[in-house]
Image (tube, rainbow, N blue to C red; front, side, top):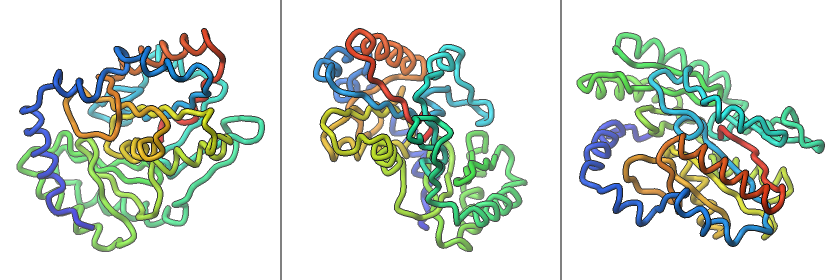
Amino acid sequence: MGLSGLLSGHRNSVQGSDFHNYTSWLKQYPSGLESFESIMKELPRKKIVVFLDYDGTLSPIVDDPDRAFMSPEVKEFVKLRNLHYAGSHGLDIMAPNSDNEANGVSYQPAKKFLPEIQQIKRALEEESRKIEGALVEDNTFCVSVHFRHVHEKDLAKLEKKVETVMENYPDFHVTQGKKVMEIRPTINWNKGHAMEYYLHTLGHNDTDDVVPLYIGDDQTDEDAFKVIQRKGQGIAILVASIPKHTNASYSLKDPSEVLAFLLRLARWRNSTSPSITTPSPNI
């Protein structure tokens, strides 16, 4: 599983970011707002399929993940007829049916792991109970261990406890997000696969007339960015207020800039042709 050094790597990356200059970083990953016209000038006759992460993209990062709410403005924007949802890093998909309804066909490639996921959740809750600030979150197909409020001196202890639990579950792996460890089944599936699945389900997988636009802030969004980069078709935008390595081509600073970009995109598309699809604000 290779948990060793996971949290220490997190600490080093945070400290290392102090040596970077955000303005200089923006030269490599320019603002999607400032670059909007140049991004869109090649797309007036293409259909844009928008993919959006949730925490840190549509909503701010907050201490309690259960209180990661969208602003009223974002809620109003995402009240779209052709909006479709996915969760657990693309492991829980509600795809449209032939009538393009959100409550269409579900796809859950890790469904067989659900009993073990619940076992892992209970074991992690028990093991982390005495570590102040640790929070275990059930995301159905993913278990998250949040350490945002864990004292520095307890991080190694928490890491060890997670590692001990996971020794009993060889079919699972641990990855790092923003002050969180995420436990998922080890299957050949990630947000990049989920994006491709949606494009295929929507009938857009093999056409030059469709451009996927993916906006996300998390390390797991990089899998979708890599797909866009590999295909050489699409727009990948990282949401970040500090410099970081990414496979995206553009950046937005925070959820308020994401909303500004989406509103501008909607106005721009309405002035050209009504062809924006938003399949998944939480993959």
